[in-house]
Amino acid sequence: MSKIQLQLKEKLNNIDFDHWSEIARTDPETFEAMRIEVINDCIDNAPRNRQQRLRGLQWQIDCLRAQSSNPLSACIKISQMMWDTLQQLGNVSRDLGGPEQAKGESKPAEATILSFAPVKKQRKR
Image (tube, rainbow, N blue to C red; front, side, top):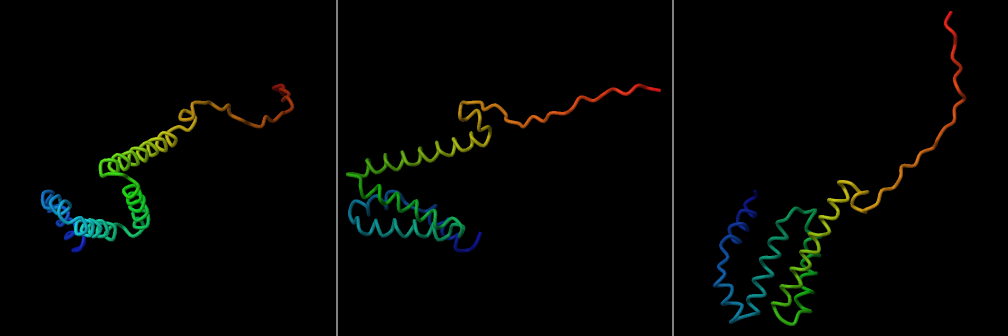
């Protein structure tokens, strides 16, 4: 792990729930800035080939939060999104294990049948 990743891990491990909760109650703007900073730090320290996907996922989460009437509603919607993704992953895994079983149908094998002239038996001399 790089020095930056170790610092991020230490920062995440030392998040004090009571402190963050108090800031959320008393100063929502500061809380939001802190939340965004931690999320961006996590994304920035993810493998480069995953950062775009993580930013897209965070955008979806932020949109769900913005559309929700309250934090509990947002939590339920985000949780449902997570379960939907997990179910899709299970479906893909099942499909890779045996596509015919996953679809619940069995397709007969198709083949081209070649006709051969009968072989005449040769007599032994």
